[in-house]
Image: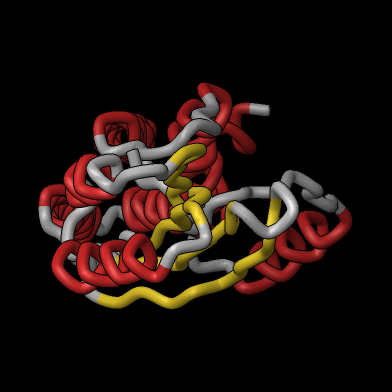
Length: 225
């Protein structure tokens, strides 16, 4: 028994193993905190944040257990292949953070502390830069304007003039007669220069005589919070 214990500690000293686990825990906690502070959306998961820290410790444990032994590595990979993870991640960004935590754990497990610290630092800085910058943002400010007007050429001309002055582009989507042809229902697809331009557009349209049922619907596919 003493021989077995001494053999295990000859491979890697317990002080080094403890430092590796602490390094994996601290750096993965930093990555988890960065994820929490920069999270955008509605599907926040506390379990995912905790999984980053736990996954880093597990990957550190596996790398310490494998060491330089190829047979151990093949055995552990084979045993892990039996386990099937069926957790679905809605956001690819969550998967990237999980991989970052696992990578930090692997680096700490092979005692490459400089790589682990440098990688976690650079990753966190890049995340904050992308968070505060507009990189990857694509806002089109599309909207759908619906209203009803009396069947008069003057009213249509007033609508066309306002659309030309307060939108970047506009196109007539639908037009149908209501109230036995005395009133026409219009639907316009509009593209605005800024998201606040819809208020000014609505105010200008309300000045047209006889307009009623004026509504504006935001048609942006995604809303970033």
